[in-house]
Image (tube, rainbow over all chains, first blue to last red; front, side):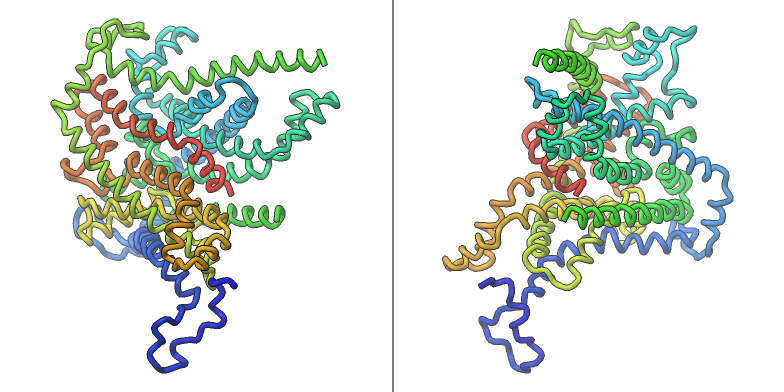
Length: 313
Length: 279
């Protein structure tokens, strides 16, 4: 007899009209709702309510520091769509997210395949493979700016040795810093792909791979015809999730490259408008653009997730 | 048989080369950070750069503690991250238990809403949160920071904890009821110990989220005495004269708890990522 199934038999307090008996059991949904309520109010208060406030802010000329706040209708959005630097920003963001996700995916699958092999010291190597993901963004940004410093950086020196030009390249200069940022971001976030792919690789039945080996299939054919089809759903999910993640990434972009106008992705543009130009309302409109895109991505992602579950169930 | 062995050894060769490259690329920035923190000023700006130091020097660490409020920033970070972890883990463990044991109409909708919340980017939330916190007087406030990080931890934690709680058979609890335990006792003595790996994973996750965050702290803290480590480090970097041994000493110290936590809970984290992040 399950104690959790009291819902159907529990009498409702209202129908009796008398004080409830002291030992009467509350229905299950009551406990469920009670246990959920702290999480519900926390998420409502700090995530959902702010979204409502964001919508409102985006229709005002709110100032970041002064108590100025009046409705301006769609002015912020119209201004945004007319501003050429907004479209530059959209382009930069798409490039940044697309390039970093593509590179992470290719490298992540390669590294996962490597770490999936059996060899001595594998657990230590795995630590190395995952370590960059754990480092705070500010540390990654500073260490890499120091490594790429044009006069004393170890990597600048290395690049100059491998690829000697007339002048040592300044990898932090406005026209190269975007590419350096892509390298740094790939260094930092590839471990997430490695872990996810590795987890999936471990569920592939090794006997199918062995059978193919016995039948004479080379490493490439085994990967292409057996491993890759198995990885397909994970990779699809990862592309969606990681694109969404990189598209809205703020910390590393801003800390490594985002204080000027060369690498002004949409999150950086949001931050600069609000805390640089003190235009809270206008910055809120940029944040709204990001929010709407996030909602679309998430809906697509959840659709595929549920469809996948139904297929595997 | 011999051809299989030959093929194997050829694969091995690629494997060894790949691993060497991987370790070098992932490890060198850590080495360079630690090395710089110990370099004496005379070696710092030599070109070509020196890849070992002959005279390690703790001057960077010394200046960090003597000329900056590093310890007070560390204290702020510790208080905020610990508070956020405690709140987030307690709240999401209760909710995960509720969702898996007492399904009610709307609990599926709640789960979906949580998934949406999980994908919200910090940059989208921080804009209105700044406005709301300003009006509520929660700027420059430990409690405000704790609540902000805790609610960012909850969606992920709840998502990750649910499979752990679902995997605990209801029969275990029913056996405890037969033995006379009430629901609170059975939850504490039967369910919680079973969910420990999941609870460790979400604790570490939430702690690191708060310990490493830059954006929320930057926006919601303006007083120097309340700064957390990441924004304090960024401000030291933005100072007019960059003292690289000092900056790298601070980076080493910020990283230390992260890497120690990582070493100890690696397997839980990997399990968590596998379970929570993808499916």
